[in-house]
Length: 103
Image (cartoon, rainbow, N blue to C red; front, side, top):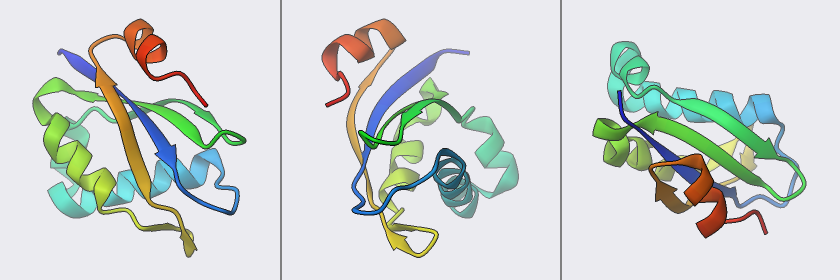
């Protein structure tokens, strides 16, 4: 299965923990596609820097656009305003980190 890597920024004033972020993304994907569809996205949280609010996600190449739509539908995490913005997408982790380094 071919994969895509996404660099994302969590736009929140408050600190969002890794497990909260992972749960919010999974719930959003599951809401839009159901449990079977969500599992087909191949979503994995590769890394998350709490202080920089920067995360690297992985999903299936064929479901990239629907996965991005599910990220766009997130407006809060655990009752805290926290929209997620996709900074960029790449086919490899190395090129993603080169093009979209954590800021």
